[in-house]
Structure formats: structure tokens, C-alpha cells
Image (cartoon, rainbow, N blue to C red):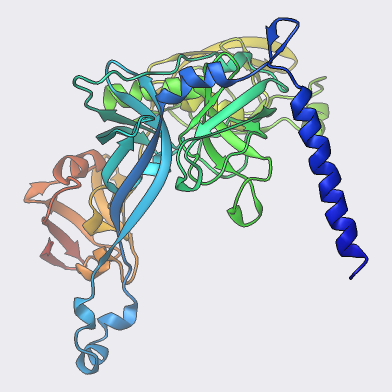
Length: 455
């Protein structure tokens, strides 16, 4: 031990002396030119990145034992335990329209929030409201009132033009520390199949992204927005290990336009079941192709059937853009509005064909009760059609959930809600609102009909 300690001290002294001399001789300018720095770009960009703090509450699922009469008899007071608990969240956001006060962030940052506070770069705090949110792509739009306040937004880049190796800068609020800037490069493009979101087409970067960076900006060296930071890949999810993901800004723009217009993303449906074109399938079809999508089934009466797509067709392009995989084709369709035109290039029996399809409304078959109202959490409502007669059924009710405690049960046929007949999911969406404090159900259970008041 005595030999190690002096050596360690002398080493530190040598390094200290060396670094002191190095910094002493580095000039501010080299041949009349200032040293390279990201500071000017960041100075213009940082005011458009905000910190987001939310406060909300979530339902607590009761243990089934609490519903046991014998338990209640001997342990009085437990039935009065709070059914909801307060949750807080920290994240980031990016001002995309300074005049209108629109801020883009991740859905998971504001999910379940009752209060949203936005802190600007200069420390000013504003209240924000949710304009629209899309959990499938993890994108949300907020709005702040900015009377007598000048906001700054970040100009958009074209994320289709970025390349692996391009420099990138991430700006956000990691660990709630306050605004932080990190830099790196674009490590990969088009990352899918990670299971993070429903629709994935991620930019991968090694710029440090940590918890709290979600919803922040990924910018290029011109200070243009190329993506919205959304996730990290780390052991246990604890922190950055050089693998972070951002949603491309082109994808974000498609979604935010709909969120601002409708408050939701209205996705259409093509009506196909598809799979990747593997080397084995390519040989079986006699194709010299390495990428593409094979149509394995076409849904009856769908947009795909009307466009004359057939099982066995190999899709190579959509609207002139190469289709590399089933997930990329799903993204293309999912980002198109209802009624949008698709020119689909397929290879059928060795011949190329271009078929035209028009995206149609997605047919919703089931709905989680919690999406209607927190008091219906735990219930799943299904739409059925029996020879043209539509009706709604509780297809599942989780034991101990708010819906279960309200006495709804699996198999209940829903006759009316708030005394209005309901036959479809659109009917029940009109009758039940998230802020309703009580909901009156009329259900048929077996041979019995009964009213159930949920409050």
C-alpha cells in the first residue's frame, strides 16, 4: 500500500502540470479564426426547448380480499382506503409554433396528467393544456397562452435527408436537473421492432439521452429539429449507454397536424395481413429481391380488396417509396389519413403492377373502458354484429377493478347508457365523457335486466 499511494500522487501532479501547460498555450483564435463551437447554434435553439412537470392521479386496483365481507367485518376502515394515488412526472417539450403556443412532447410524459406546468428557458412557468395525444406513436401536443410573451420555436429539418454519421445535439431535462445539452452522431435510422411504441421508425443516436429527456429536441448542427427524443436502451432502464431513440420530425409533423385539427390521429386501414419477404420466400416466388413485403391475406370488403390486391403479391413500393419491411409498410399506412391515395407497386407472377388504393376508416371492434372514463377502468367493451343487428357486450371485467366494484360483469349486454340506447362503440363514446361523475348503465344479464349507477 505504501508504494501505490506515492505513485498515485505523483501521477496526479504530472497530469495536472501537463494540462495546465496545455490550456495555457491554446489561443482563442487560430490564424484569425475562432475555434469551432456549438454555442451560437445552441444559444438560438435552447429557448424553444421547455421543461414539463405534470401532476395527476391513477386508479389503485383493490386487492380482491378487500371485497370479502368477512375481511371487512374484522378489519373495518380498509374499505375507505383511497382508490386513487397521486403521480408526478418530469419531461421535456419543444415549441413548434411560437405564435399559436403549440408544444410537442411525448404522450407518456403527460399521460394521466391533471395539471401540466411548462417552464421556459428563462424560468417563467406557464400552465399548459393538452390539445391532442396519440399513445400509439407516443406524441402529444400542448398549448400555452402566451399573451405579452414572445416564444421561440425551432425550424423543422427534413428527417428523410439525414444520414448515419451526421452530428446531432440532444436538448432536454434529464433527471429533472434542468436544461441540458449533449452531442453525438446519428448511429442508425429506421429502427423498428423494439416494442417501445405501436408505430416505430426511430432515429438512433449516441447523444446522451436519459430519463427526463423524453419529449426534448434532437437537432442538427444548423439548429433544425430532426427528431423528438423518446426512449433509451439501457440495462434496467437506469440511464444512457450510448443508445437513444428519437421520433423523426417528418413523422411527428404528420401526427401533429392531425392532433391539432382533430385532437386525435385518425388512422385508416388498408386491410391486409403481411409478412417480410425472406430469402426463402424470394426464392419460392422466383424473385431476385432482398427486401419487400408479402401479402398473406386480404380482408374482405377492405380497401385492399377494392384495389384488387391478392394474397401472394409482393409489395416493393408505396407512392414511389421503397417498402423494406412489414413494419415500415405498417408505418406508411398508419400515417396516412382516411381517404388518402396509395399507389402500390406489386410483383405478381413475375410481372410488375401498380394498384391504387384509398385508405378507409379503421373498424374498431373493442374499447377499454378506461379510455371512456376512469370509473370504467378494468372493463373491455366489444362491438358485435349479428346479421346486421349491432350490440355491445362487456367482453371482460377485471376482478377488483373500478368497473368490477361498480358491479359490471363479463357478458353483460349493454342496452342503454344514461337512458339513451347504445348499439355501437361510437354511440357509447358520445354518451360517456372522461369528466362524468356518474354513469347510468342498463344491462341485460342472463334473463334479467338491471340498472347500474356508476359513481
